[in-house]
Length: 381
Image (cartoon, rainbow, N blue to C red; front, side):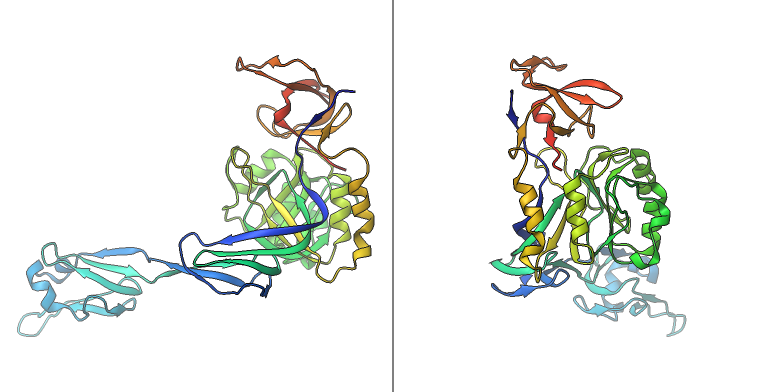
């Protein structure tokens, strides 16, 4: 039987997982090598310059630029508070003085006696990097950040939105093929990672955000529901910076798709345990997958033995063969799921005119589609 090899999403009951936690600009690392850290502990910190606010002081005081330095109540470099006087005119015979107050908290950075302008620099903005995953600091990168390691269960998704989130896993659906509806979301799920089965509805997403859930994990989502949640059409892009108040991770694809058996079983086995979730996704060069990381601190090794055994049984890892369940990961069939129907040996000419090794995918209610082998990934479970 014809075979080929392709990567798939990682779904591991136990893996040695490492995360790099780096500052965007040089700063100070606040932990040491060998130190145990919690998920929401600050491991590195830096500061960026505050915003610049220009003020036309000479105009506001009704004086010439040359007269301005003598009217200042603050020296260049002094700290100022919002609504604190920074300059005052002499008035007429000491009367009718005009006072100009600072519009921000910050520092009087400069005053020009040629333009009459003053520059106020807002207070420095702190940038704090959290550990994200509980574990041990195995390496310190001076001035940059740290690398943290721990034994964990790891589930990668195909698509996600929203940044990093933390919470205990709350199982909302009883089976992997049950849709996550609004009525399954309860106030008790505040601050938790809500795990569904198949498609999560738009109403369920709104309810999860309303009750204050940290994240939602489901097998599928309708693209129109995602657009409604975000307020715009995302397309194929880099995600993770959305300010939505809720992180969403989709494990299988768009539409009515049940979560893979092993993925659902693994998440269900960890119900009540803490998890770190990141919805950041990059589909194109430098692929980045959304993920759910569940540290195994304090977990009895025998508890996950069955799942680990299941992971090692069945098909050879990474093998494509007739009947293998796959997902298309590039346009124009992005997100489509089906089974391998044929693995032609000879390269085929694509629509672009180039040649590539292809395979035929049988899609329910849609017949067969032909796609490059590099455009698919395995679905385990």
